[in-house]
Amino acid sequence: MTHRLLARPELGSVVGVIAIFVFFFAIADPFRQATSMGTVLYVSSTIGIMAVPVALLMIGGEFDLSAGVNVTASALTASMLSYQLSLNVWVGVFVSLLFALGVGFFNGFLVTTTRIPSFLVTLGTFLMLQGANIAVTKQVSGQVATDNISDMDGFGAAKAIFASSFDIGSVTIRITVLWWLLFVAVGTWILLRTRAGNWIFAVGGNEDSARAVGVPVRQTKIALFMGVGLCAWFMGMHRLFAFSTVQSGEGVGNEFIYIIAAVIGGCLLTGGYGSAIGAAFGALIFGMTNQGIVYAGWDADWFKFFLGVMLLFATVLNMWVRRLAVRR
Image (cartoon, rainbow, N blue to C red; front, side):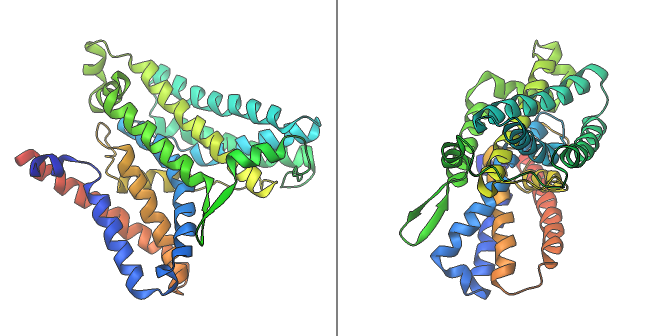
């Protein structure tokens, strides 16, 4: 029983969640209020939705540095296509889905075909998307932000799916929290209950050995990159329908937050080890720390300091837990 518990990759993140919660609960009065938990969960969900596919990709032995800007690129594609051509917003939504999946396929295809490390391939995609986001938006709309699409056909229905909210007592819950839980459940089911899950662990553990026993390495990795693209599209739609407009420079740097959340959740940088639930706990640590610093009245600059501490702590703890589990 103890051995199985120590072998769980999310053990360290569970300890981190408890420690962070107790810490801010003790020092920040607003953190104790039920209404604050709605904000904490919302912030966590916006990270967690992306942390799940990023964790699966890392378990498969790869990285995607274009994940953050792909969120913005998806939102820009849907917004500008719908507004400039006066189409129902659902047309832009589905075209942007194809675009986001195409970015994921492009990354996966190049990585598996050229054998160039995914760090370099997705860094190139990151730079291309970052430049295109700003340049195309300026060229089309004449400014760095897209036009407001809140009065266009289909906006209300899309907002209900991607950016609505509801109340439970005095707590406002954003719908992204429900989507986050769904994505975690699906990611966990894929990893633990399907053949594809075994393939993901196999290609991340030892790619050559996995190929030797018949695992479709190339298809598995391309699918993982496209999974990141799918969730990037979803978060892009949330941003678009939550604010009605999109800033073309958004998203830069978020890719590291998604990766760090996965690492805090127990994913190894070397691949082959991790969980979707752990990534969810990693995102929750981010959400509590981000809002806890605000509720405590501290300078927001301290967030990055805490981020570095948590990353080092999680990495050391994960290594220690793994070694302990192996010895037993």
